[in-house]
Image (tube, rainbow, N blue to C red; front, side, top):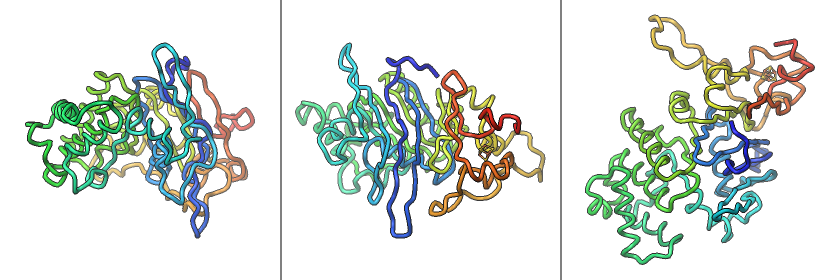
Length: 344
Ligand code: SF4
C-alpha cells in the first residue's frame, strides 16, 4: 500500500457514526481509519452488520436519521490541474451545496438492489439525464446524447430505444447496468459500490464486475467496493479493509491479506471459504458464535466472544489499539502489542 500523498484520493480518519435510538445508541462505525488511492480498488469486507454500508453512506453524508457522524474526518483530495484541495466531507452540512457538488459528480454510489434506488415512475433516460443536467453545463439534447452513449458503454443493447424504458421493464442485470451508467455519467473520481452484485446470478455478477474494471481503466477512477464475498475481493481488490462490529480490524494490500492474514477474524473469514476438493460430509469451517447484539457491545476487543486466541482477563478488558505493521499494513489485535506478543 503506497503512502505517497499525491496517490491518496480519500482519507477516512477516526470516523464514528452512531445511531441514537430509544433502545440505546448503536455505534455502527466506531473509529475507522483507511485510505483510498487514486485509480485503485479498495474492498471493504466483513459480515452483515459490521458497519460497511454505514461507512460508505457517511462518506456521501447520506446516513439515515437518527444516525449521524459524531467524530472523525473524511478528507477528499480534489485535484484542480496541478493543485490539490483537501475537503473535509464529514464537516459539511448533509443538505448543503458543498456536499451536493461532490455527491453524484466527484463521488458516486451504486447500491445492491437498483429497484429500490431507481425511481419506478421515471424512465432510466430521465434519471440519467437528471444527473447530467444537475452537474454539467449542457443542453437537454446534449444530455440525452450523453445518456445514450453511456448506456451503450455499459452494454445495454439498442440504447436509443431502451432510454425510454422504466426500471421494471429491464432485467436485474440490465437495471444494475443502468445504475452504473447513472453513477458514471459525470466521470467521478471515486465510485462507491455497495454489494453491487449480491442480488444477481453468478454469470451476470461476473459480467458486472468485469464491466466495472473495464470502466475503471477507461475513466481512471478509484473504486470502493463493499462486499462479504472474498472471491470478489480476490478478483477486484488492490487494498483491503476488514471490518468487525464498527472497527477496521485489519488493512493491507490484497496479497498480504490473503497470504499472510494477521487478525484472528481475518484468518477465520479465510478459513470459512468453501474449498474445491472437500470430501462429502466434511464440515465447512465457520466462525463460532454470532455477531453480538449492537445494543450490548462486549467490553474490550469486540471480537473476544468469538476469538479462539483470546487472552482471558485481557481481551475482554482492553480495546486493542491500531498497530502499524509496515508497508501500510495495520491490525487491531492485542497479540501484536509488545506486551502480549508472547501469547501468539
Ligand atoms: Fe482475539 Fe484478543 Fe486479538 Fe481480539 S485482541 S482478536 S480477542 S486475540
